[in-house]
Image (cartoon, rainbow, N blue to C red; front, side, top):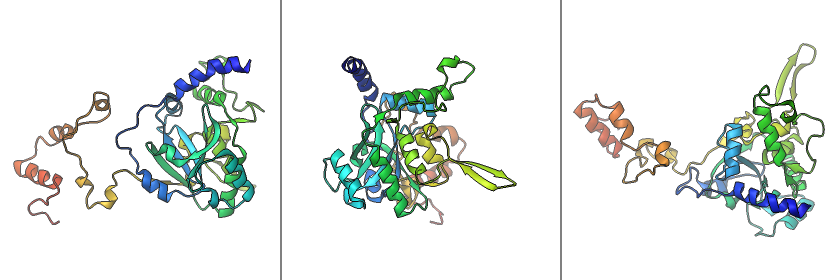
Length: 306
């Protein structure tokens, strides 16, 4: 029965996981991320697969995947955890490692380099202690080998879908007791549970009462999506753009002009360099246009204070 089911589902999983080619130049600088990432950082990924597009549609966010960075094997203090990692990963000991839950793979450990061509963002838990960081890593490592919970994705979709349109038997089971298997998870849920194990907040509910004062309630981890780490006030957002004007004299010196041309698909979302100039600067005088052209070319305009 299992072989028959796999014969049906495996082609579907391969189709869903098929990725579009990466962009010629990603939006982030992977080398800087590789050097700056720290254990317990949550790495958000803007996926390129069909299943990523489904998750983006459901969550209304560009981030379709989240993974937990655990560092290199020798960065982990507990020898038991290192031994468990060694059983699941046979790569180089200096590899930067992540733990993630992927459709078709389950919860696995892989090198960070698998996402070198993708748009990434670091979400760093603010003020987390070294000891708690090791506990988060321990929790994630203990879940290696768990299957990917496809049903939870559909449950999330059903939860977000207007309840009055959907028949009762098709409504979300996320809040039902013991809903789903205990050996299945998805990417953001596993990470949310790992941080929940040390009582680290992501998007808690804060309530106030006259008797007890302020109290916080941990959110159901099955409702956690990758964008929640981006939205959380308890995570620092770290960006390393591929072209970073902070390290240049002027953001206007970025290479906005050139001989490059947009493809038909790209032109649906991006505009050519001449698009805004004709629309917005028609009333400019000749001197103003001359000054702007000089500024755009990196030369100070006449009478400029710079």
